[in-house]
Length: 240
Figure (spheres, rainbow, N blue to C red):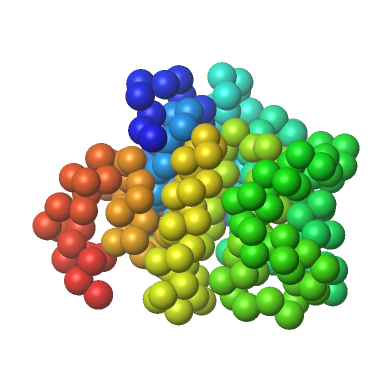
């Protein structure tokens, strides 16, 4: 399911983000169209997490614009953006360990005024295992199962855009593959996805397009298939 020339859902336009006097993001422009799966690649200290924080409104850029669903949200708070249709699956999942799977899922609909049965059913149809485990405490699940809960929780708000922060972090290789299968499945259900990742191989294999960040600048942007075939990228990322 590619963008099909669909309208732009998320757009960063020449964004400069600072921490104090340090210019972390420099003239970063990127786009996610409705229905697209886009990955943002980069190593440590490339600016990936700052880009995510800028998209979510945790930090405000000093220059440039952030547009979401046709609206300039550059100065809007995080809660506003989430209510408008962004959802985040954070790095390390950050579940409520002493709560059950179902209680964790219901927390995802909190800003929407509470969980609706049809949203729960939709999440359970995507992740049948979670329905089996719905009364189990989230803290007792395996890493892969916890990732399903984190994704399910994000989907409970019926987002237009799902942001994923380092979904392969801390998972065994076999679980990484499984995890990206799930991301692909979520995307095929009609949600636009932006995956922020170090693992270029696996994220490009399911993405429509990709961007590569280096020290706060976008140095490559192309169709995912072209990036996978790019020699420089292969040397920098895929050789490992």
